[in-house]
Amino acid sequence: MTEVHRPYVADKPAQRETNEQLRARIPGWGVDLDPQDRPGYPREQPGIETGAHWELPERQEETYPRERSIEHGMLPPVFGTVAPLHGVSGAIKRYAYARYSEGRLAHWLLLIVGDRVEAFGAHVRSFATLHPDLPVKVGAVVAAEVHGEGLRSRFGQRRSDVKHQWLDPVVVLAPWVVSGWVGYRLTKAVLGRR
Amino acid sequence: MQAMVYRGPFKIRVEEKDVPRIEHPNDAIIRVALAAICGSDLHLYHGMMPDTRIGTTFGHEFIGVVHEVGSSVQHLKVGDRVMVPFNVYCGSCYFCARGLYSNCHNVNPNATAVGGIYGYSHTTGGYDGGQAEYVRVPFADVGPTIIPDWMADEDAVLLTDAVATGYFGAELGGIREGDTVVVFGAGPVGLVAARSAWLMGAGRVIVVDHLDYRLEKAREFAYAETLNFTQVDDVVVFMKQTTDYLGADVAIDAVGAEADGDLVQTLTSSKLKMQGGSPTALNWAIDSVRKGGTVGVAGAYGPVFSAVKFGDAMNKGLTLRMNQTPVKREWPRLFEHVRNGYLVPHEIVTHRVPLSEIPEAYHLFSAKLDNCIKVLVEPAAA
Ligand SMILES: NC(=O)c1ccc[n+]([C@@H]2O[C@H](COP(=O)([O-])OP(=O)(O)OC[C@H]3O[C@@H](n4cnc5c(N)ncnc54)[C@H](O)[C@@H]3O)[C@@H](O)[C@H]2O)c1
Ligand SMILES: [Zn+2]
Ligand SMILES: [Zn+2]
Image (cartoon, rainbow over all chains, first blue to last red; front, side):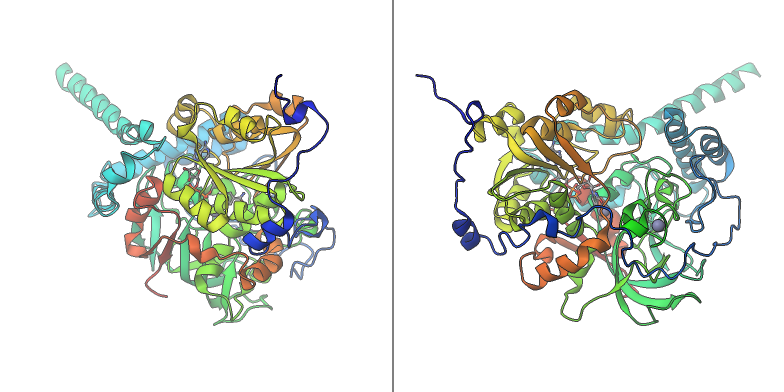
């Protein structure tokens, strides 16, 4: 006779442990049993007390042209002012904000391209300072690997991420290798033409 | 002041930065006493969040002392010790007025689909975070709350995100008495979600991850059964077998954008950025849950599309519930649970480092070395 499993019949099989057993084993079991007596219920609570004592917040001063999503009807009254857009990456991002809604893939791809352009510029500029951005934060990584026992933490464990973690340095280094190669070819082409 | 600063994917350092200033009458400047690194920070660290600008300071989990207040601040004064929800929110827009604090419309020019978050790229508003000595906190009369005398600092800082989000994740699952709940991810969020599932009356709780040290924590901290997914050929079949082929009543995704376990998903998301995130855990959740069941998504995903198994979710008649956590709504209940010992947040802390060592800590947490689960960060000025 074939065994009949749970969903092929109507009854819900008994719980493995009774509520009493669970309550004895797990401190606080069931204290929030009632789904209607949880902090997120109901999801929307018109009139909830928030501490706000304004109808519309006062407007923060816009000290530089603040980019915004074209899905916004106006510049929201409060915003972050960290790292204003600048240079080539800034131009790319401004275009992404001005032209494409959040619904468009182009919006996000342009922002990601802008991120990489900005990072590349920052790395190059950093070589003219006392704190060059090395391709990998060598000191910190080595310290963490030594202190965190990188080998023992990774191998002989039953981890899934070690299969692709080695790709991370490749992902980080690839732009350096590619730009180094492009730079080399360009220099050679320019010098060769003379 | 000293602050953690982003220099590009996988590159952060500690830099000297100006102390932030009041930019709006309801701002406060907080001197950070204790901060934490969240799994969400790893998405930024790995360069997965669009418009993460060089020079940004991360950190949306922090507590501290009020250092300065703007002219319209009524509820806080200099010297108060406060905990700050990770949401930046106004308290008065259409969404805040209904309790959807994480969906505020008044604080993020860069996107309408997400509210404001401290130190979480320009896509969430372009604010600096709390992995620094000082931080600007907008709407000081709305978000920050005075830390109760009886509460330990470690518990308070964890309540600003990880604990609230774990509990909220369980809430999203709509758990009912006797339900079988499977939680994907045994990070801080998943551990608290699993523990909270019992408070909501679950009959069985199973936690899935591939890091044995975290699964061990899930057994101790969350009283859960565990599965290392690398030890089974097919997670979904395992879930069916262990529930007598019914499927779990509720599944919770506490993994998010960088889920492991499917190399194609990982390559196209984390490595090549062709998807907003790898939905491997979310797809396992959809396929593991029973027809008519609920999937609660606490894991975070980027704004670009992800290859989600939507057809299965539709055909199974699932309820999918998700959001960034409206942290302060959860607090009164969570304060009770911490006080009663039903939730003991500080038990998940594994590392505590000075701000100057934060680059090392990011690598440790990202590569999951030294049995790392949760890292707390202490700024020098504290
Ligand atoms: N909704 C919110 O408001 C909110 C708030 C905080 C964090 N989050 C998100 O929650 C998620 C978890 O945060 P955390 O701090 O616990 O991060 P974490 O990185 O410490 O934990 C994630 C865990 O998932 C495990 N994992 C990876 N792939 C898996 C898979 N396929 N199945 C099961 N487990 C898998 C990892 O090994 C790790 O232990 C992140 O995506 C984070 O961005 C959301
Ligand atoms: Zn977080
Ligand atoms: Zn609002």
